[in-house]
Amino acid sequence: MKPFPILCPGQHFVSSFDLPVSARILGATPAHPYLGVRLRFNPISLRSLIEEAQLPTLASGVPDRGVYVSPTMPALLDAVLRLVRLLQFSSGDSRARPDD
Image (tube, rainbow, N blue to C red; front, top):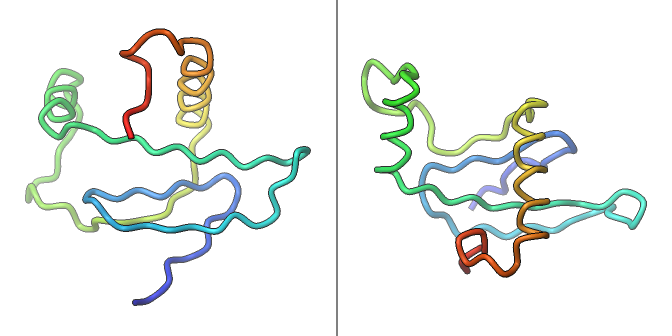
């Protein structure tokens, strides 16, 4: 199995299907911590959001790739950080708890 490229700060990994993934964090310190977040989406709910927001879809209906690494846009990073902060402060709310 070919190893996946190394993720650098400011990048994210996306997979459109379940994969067995393992990672090793190198260089994280209290001064420079590492944050890893896994978000799983319900495809039916996601499709509904895409239609509601009137986002463009692929003409072929088939994605051109199932796994990729990409630079994280500031707006996405801000949204993820707000989600993490929400999860820190909403431990009593079962709707905001991660499911493992």
